[in-house]
Amino acid sequence: MKIFDTHSDMLYDLYTKKISGVNNRFTDFHVPQLLKSDVSGALWTMYSPDDFDLMESLKIAIGEINMKQLPKFEVMLGLEGLRNLPNWEDINKVYDLGIRHAMLTWNEENKYATGVAGDPARGLTEEGRKLLREMERLDMIIDVAHLNEKSFYDVLNFTHKNIIFSHGNLKSLCDHRRNLTDEQLKALKDAGGMIGLTLASNFVSKKPELQDIEHFLGHVEKAIKVMGMDNVMFGFDFMDYLSDFPNSNIRDLADATKTPGLITGLSRHGFSEKNIQKICYDNFYKRYRRHIHKF
Image 1 (cartoon, one colour):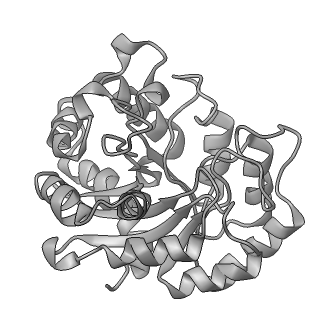
Image 2 (image 1 turned 60 degrees about the vertical axis):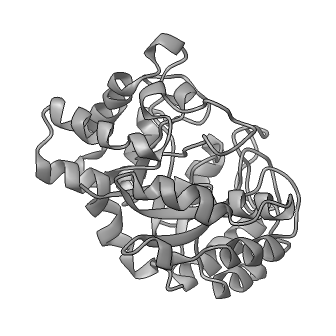
Image 3 (image 1 turned 90 degrees about the vertical axis):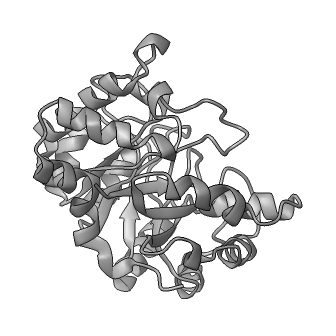
């Protein structure tokens, strides 16, 4: 069974490791791990938790990738946050490097919108609207993950084009600031969007003993009830390779090599092979395969 992972910090990892003096990170770490997993496609992003030169970072990260080592693996390139995009017009510069996806913020406030750590009363800005208009023109994927509720609704009131929520879970099952309320899920569905459910442990449950595959599958089942089978996908957000977030994924799906256990779990919960294929791969890939990057 193939899986398309709609959120991976691959580009950030390759960039930060390279500038710290680590060579061959892609070849030595990521390739062996992915070859042992069911992940056969992914949205690889440049995560932006702080300030750095976005164009330089992208060029360095993309230069580290050798797709000949991952035959048949399919990749889209994206941005987790735009704090380092100097002006909205610069979205064209990253587009020219192959970027086809972007979140407006990580958790912070920036010139475009407001993340979950920002002022709840502050939403999408005028610069953000200009940016969205340009992303629409470029046919880019607009990712509403990490936005606070006001920015989330501001974006959906502005556009319904190419909307996803790449990685997060359900607030009704785990009251985390990054999870979505049922009302947000319904608005996302009405916008033609999809939710990518994540394996981040504290998004699954606040109780350590419940941070496991069974309780993750509870999020899957409820998301389908609200969003429908065609609008649910997986945005794993594996953090085993990020030093700032050790042991941050659920214990029985701690890294990409454990993904066969997810397929087994879905089957155990009564999902048909057809529906497992939809959630794991087809829902996202069939809608956005035009954005696959040609290395």
